[in-house]
Image (cartoon, rainbow, N blue to C red; front, side, top):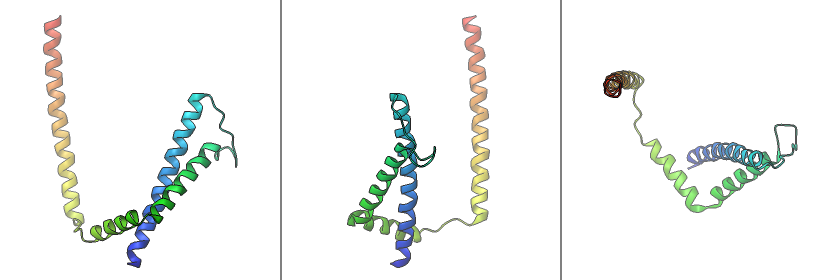
Length: 126
C-alpha cells in the first residue's frame, strides 16, 4: 500500500500546481477586466490573485487527503493502472504512424472536397 500512496501524493501535488496556476490566472484576468488592482506581494510575479489561487489549491489538496472517499478512489485508480498492459515501443510507433498517415489522407480528401465545392458554388453564384 505504501507504493500506491506515493503515486497518489504525487498526483495530488501535481493537481495542486495545476489548480494554483489555473485559479491565479483566472482571478488575475477577472481582476484586470474588472479594473481592480492586483497588488504585488512578493515581487511582481507573486500577486494577491496568486496567493488566493495558492490558498484554493492547498484547500483542495487538504480536502482530497482528508476525504476518505477521494483517497480510496485515488488508490483504486493507481491499483487499476498497475494492471494495465501498456503497448511495446514498436507497436506504439507503428500505431502512431498509422494515425498520422490516416489523418493526412483524410485531411487531403476533405481539402479536395472543400476545393471542389468552393469552385462549384463560385460558378453558381458568379
